[in-house]
Length: 456
Image (cartoon, rainbow, N blue to C red; front, side, top):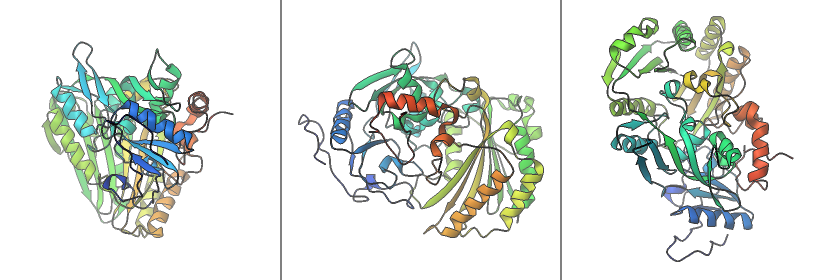
């Protein structure tokens, strides 16, 4: 591939082989990558030149913000002939103190966004708590975190973007400008363009955050089945206070329940949640916003580290009526005890969702899981990763689906093994996405192994 002819002050593009530079290293070491080139543009004009060059020479394009795709899709997902646009240089930030809308560069990591919003007037928005995840991918597939039940998903905060489309044009997209493109970018941006800048609405930081954590140490997973059932009943309650987010994490030694409540300790106790949480009422503390984010990030790092490892994952999304009953839960947890996992590094995370996310109509954006109340994610890590460990997760997933009619999963939990991935990621919005793809990228310049196909 010949680098584009650009003005001399613009960067030179290096063609590299996989792993020859640190920034080409994949997140999932179990999936080898072979990008044609990895490019670090300085500005949107550079992005446009790269897209035009790649398209003219028959290469596919994918953007990378934080580089945490489970399938390494930002580096081609194991397929040859993909040009990666690394957005690391897009770190711009500003705050409009009249509207309290922030402008954020698409290469920014969530930890940096948190600090910049705080410094710009004590502002905040909803997203995940892994500090080294990039906002460019995270906020355009959903962007879920413990505050999402209260404020909605990250993509629900986006009011406008700058995006470079398949024809190499720099565009603005919002509800009033290129509205069909804006619809698709909020849920499936990697299929439609390279976003370089977000304009987002923000909230005042909560003054108080109460955090809860309780660890159950048992010899068998079956011993925590009743505890899980009680937690599931709590998080699926339609009247559950939206200020509360929670996870249940099953691991080799037992389980951990975490909870975050955005309010005072008195408000937390008045909500009735402590009386319904399984285990002891152990408060981690009553924190300010930044301390609470740091604590959640530390918890998350115990399981979903930013370090590259060989891993495999499965996941599923549940509507309230699709949650597994107590008989099924006991059966699944008992089955888990009987299995050889092939590794001591395995864990299964159940996340509460819903709340404010469900207030937005299903067809308002491309994101299609607004009717869900819970996700599950399972992980095995191995050095190297064995077939036995993968089989354990595949079979665990089979046990889950045996007891539920749930179908579909969050596109943030990319699963390269899914055969009907687009339908699972985008559900009832998939056909409209195909129509938008036909308008904005009919030649599939933006492509990964599970990308949206343009309508015929």
